[in-house]
Length: 462
Ligand code: UD1
Ligand code: CA
Figure (cartoon, protein in one colour):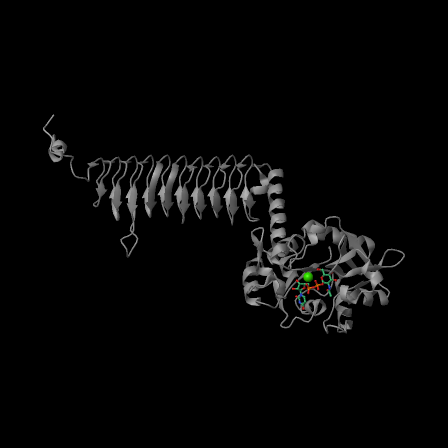
């Protein structure tokens, strides 16, 4: 059996430089909170019960956010340094196997990189392996000190570094793989830093080396993966990079994305093969898009379910709603609050559906508001039709049965029902239910008064 992989995610800090009331790891990039990205990557390597998130600032909110994922939590009430934070998970994590330490503010780190870290750690038979990278500007980071053989002998923080050490451009990412048993045995040997009084996890390197163990570096090429978020400027950079990554993954999986740099797709979104996403589209939340769909330019979809072959034309907005096979929306269409457009139905420009079911093959092509309604199959809703679902106190339902025809500019005052196969004359105000197979005319009859205008103008009749 393979040894246990445990992962500690340090996420107790407030993140002062964010200048926020909210703990840093709760800020979002790429559609998820920073710490969620790290947890997702961790869960690709470790079982949830072997992942511990160290919480401190806004522990309750962080715990609530992550609860569903089955990971464990350790509380660090006072932020006394990275070494202290790790010590807080001692009871939560396994005593043996491998232990990876990651940071909750490092959202770009890939699971594959952690996998490679573990592979390198095993191959080198190290007691500790540190992910490092070489930066043009290493300022702010801990510097990696090595011996002639290339093994790591220590990590020195920027503040404590000698001018010579400051020249080192290989930096400590803060992500490590430890032999768990050795780490837990010696973590107590870390003493408070003379300057800050904090317990630095970086001190473990010297401690292990002094005991005769090997510490190695695992250098990585792409330093962007190690980007730790400290400010909102860095948050925006991470957001862009994460979105770029997501968009690329979808393209490689068979989705066409026009002008991908303008498109936003959240991490939780699924998109089927041969779907086309046009420029400036935003697909957010837990949206699921089928195959061969079109998501038009500048459309915004949140928690949308779009089935195979459905078309969302430009500038449409879909929230918490569903479009079934081959349904069409827009341009300038809006679906919200569990609107459900059945197969082949059409919702055209400037039509809003709220909590409304539109039956298969039915059409509402132009300028309508349909709220709290159930509409059957093959119904035609004329331009300008309005369901008056709200009386100022309560919302009321409208039922429009199959194969009926609602003439243009009709006003349906709910609660009301239009029977199967019935007709509503254009411009009607319908206040009582209409039986099946009936023409309802709910407007005043037209009266023609010949000569009335000339009389008014005082001219003789022509
Ligand atoms: C740390 C490393 C440094 C490395 C850098 C990489 C140490 C002493 N230094 O410095 O070598 O180059 O990361 O980004 O480890 N945290 C807690 N509790 C604490 C302290 C920190 O949970 O008591 C968490 C923070 O929320 C954060 C992470 O640990 O997610 C890193 O802490 P931070 O204070 O940012 O470390 P750095 O000074 O950046
Ligand atoms: Ca930091």
